[in-house]
Length: 115
Image 1 (tube, rainbow, N blue to C red):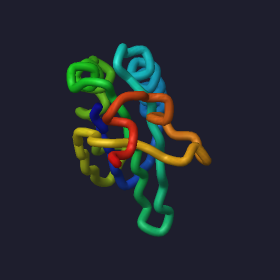
Image 2 (cartoon, rainbow, N blue to C red; image 1 turned 180 degrees about the horizontal axis):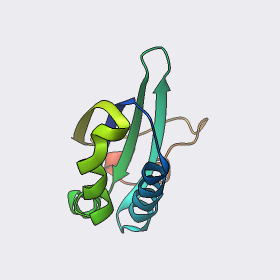
Image 3 (tube, rainbow, N blue to C red; image 1 turned 135 degrees about the vertical axis):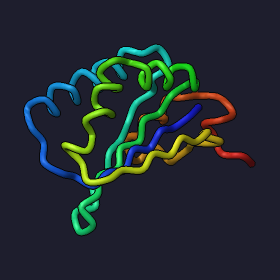
């Protein structure tokens, strides 16, 4: 499994931003291998961080190569004031079930704690 974390400083959004954002979100959810996402906001720092979870790098690559994603990257400076992306391999994911998480339903050695 893999994660792609997109952290950015919020700027001014317009209608085009919202349209592209919806297309990208719908596209991601339709890609075989998309496992889910979660988002966090640090209001004092003005940062938003969204973590997308993927079964494979190929699945993530499909989103990266999608025309709407490419268009958004080309215009990102109109809507955000800086960003950073981290692509990581998920070694393990587990919890006590007390909160929902996109990887909670994933089974196998990568999703359970090691003894």
